[in-house]
Image (cartoon, rainbow, N blue to C red; front, side, top):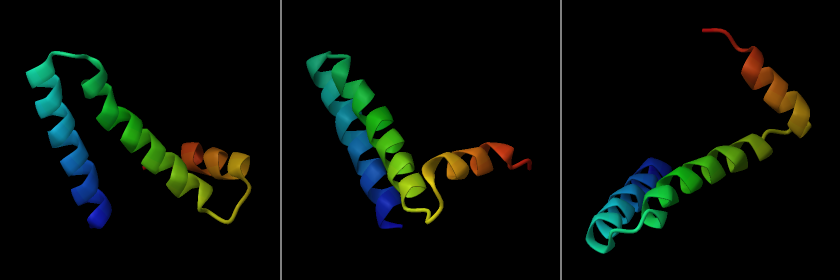
Length: 61
């Protein structure tokens, strides 16, 4: 839950900063932080990285 709140806070703050300062870089911050979060969670899986990525993309819902 703390991750959701922190990513939400990062998103809100960066959107507000982007609208105030009119710079595109602030709008990329939430995307980069969510990508980094996903990458860290994938790395934490005790399988080798390539096997984990293959397993994720083989899941069918």
